[in-house]
Image 1 (cartoon, rainbow, N blue to C red):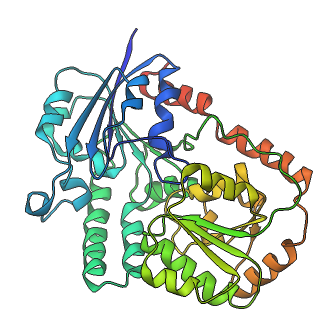
Image 2: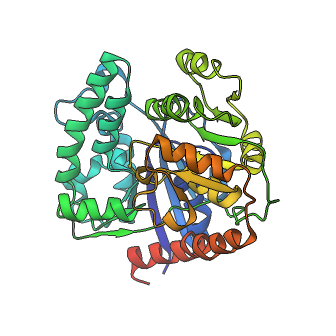
Length: 377
């Protein structure tokens, strides 16, 4: 039996190594290797069409994301209402192939009775209403804060309303899975690890690196807040080289970083430059006040770097606690980083990482599991 699958992506997936699109892109070749014929539907929003997608998909369709008043809705969250597209729905109605929706963003069709009889699956990348609440708390802008709070309220109602509308949901962390089960009473959700680049194998590096590194999308308010917290509470007190690398840092963040001579900002590094910095760092500093989803910066550091120092929130539900040094507050961050900076990264740590990571994040195994869930094979 031929296995055809519609995948609706909330953006245009493309290969990145320090962004949030890992799972979206790397599932495509993994499912293709399981003889799944993929019909990809994705929304253009500040992204160009990606020819590489044709290598893994039978068909690729692009749709505009609604903007301005067209995307306004009193009931639907903006991330959902801005992706309502009748051309997409008509394309899906041309056959009865199963439909995989990436993120809550792509789930509008769950409210459409024309799809009641279809096999429908949802990939949960975050508990979105909690993520938007955290964005509101981190925002300096009153208007953005009000937008994020409104979106959070709508998302909470919306997420609760769809849990019985799909055949199954798949979360990226055990914490997200447990939240859907306990708070939304969803009985059809399971854990499915994120898909990662096939080139990611646990690296054997030299024992010593050169600096501490924080890496992430610095244009996101919660990441900016994380860096500001680390500067104020940790690296103002310990004079250890600290590199902050990421996309589009604000003027505020730049000015704060430049106050410290032992801190360095690398704006908008290429993927190659980012991976090079990860390989040369001695300590990866993972701090977050939001426990939403999986922290891909953490996975990148564990596969491709040395010591990882993280707060409990940033690794909650990941089952990766044994691979990190946990710091509970500013003082413990200072203490752990100071102790580790001259401590070699040992070979047995690499062995432990291989045992945990390469078993958990196995694209072939995860694709086989997803095929079994969809087609019962």
